[in-house]
Amino acid sequence: MYIATKSIIDKDKTKVVADVIMPKFPQDFLNKIICGDAVEIMKQIPDGRVDLIITSPPYNLKNSTGNGMKDGRGGKWANAALQNGYSHHNDSMPHEEYVKWQRDCLKEMMRLIPEEGAIFYNHKWRVQDGLLQDRQDIIGSFPLRQIIIWKRKGGLNFNPGYFLPTYEVIYLIAKPKFKLAPKANAYGDVWEFTQEMRNEHPAAFPVSLIDRIISSTNSKIILDPFMGSGTTAISAINFKRDYIGIDISPEYCEMAENRIKQRQSKMTLW
Ligand SMILES: C[S@@+](CC[C@H](N)C(=O)[O-])C[C@H]1O[C@@H](n2cnc3c(N)ncnc32)[C@H](O)[C@@H]1O
Image (cartoon, rainbow, N blue to C red; front, side):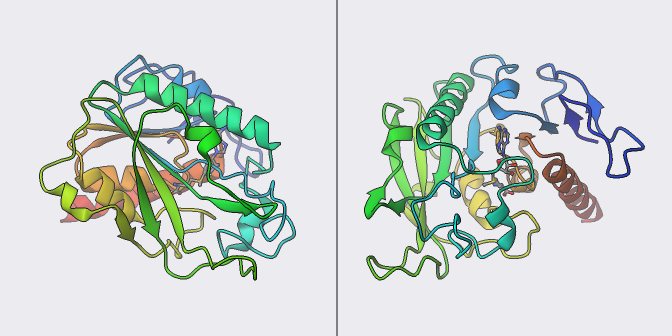
């Protein structure tokens, strides 16, 4: 059962489906999924206690000047579900508000990692009003060490004004003493992984992408403050690391819990 910061009742409104508490570190965090707001929950974690953060925030796709999600023609994901936003977040904030929110999230993430820590922050560039929006307004002033290109298979957004976008970016934001695991440097900075197609979450990571990141570090405790369907937790389990997962949506927290249970029972069988 995941942990919730507000009372969460099942669909038939008959029972509370999650433990309702304000979680305390570390006992309510390690290897737990917490349903609540990313910034609010991160504030409960003391400084420097998370080795690695891997995350993909909502991209604010529905706030678009066109050829995006707003008019229902598609965009980042073929999945129609995302055209309605996430289950508990509509992905359509005024741009300045969105940038401030994401910078607040990153500030909190920076506080949580030690001098050897790093954040892998996945985002997507897009064209707005005919000009590239490269998310510099979000990540500017954070210690960006590298941009990894995640090349996906195919793409959407057929626009005669520019070539078909086929990649997303992963910002490696690192504190000074961050180092990769031995040999990981040979992966280079362009990674090709097919996007996840079999997940009911509208914007899930492929597990193989997160496996690449986690196996490239020696981190022990890994946080994803936008955990969605639990992909970062699944990968942490694959490499016997500890995870902390946060998501605002009870549906996605439940999805994550179910995936984690299935993964753990397979690991036990083996
Ligand atoms: C791009 S998805 C992450 C998907 C995830 N990487 C996966 O593999 O399933 C972004 C997630 O952010 C969550 N979210 C939106 N607003 C949030 C908030 N204020 N705090 C925590 N999670 C939030 C959404 O519910 C959604 O699951």
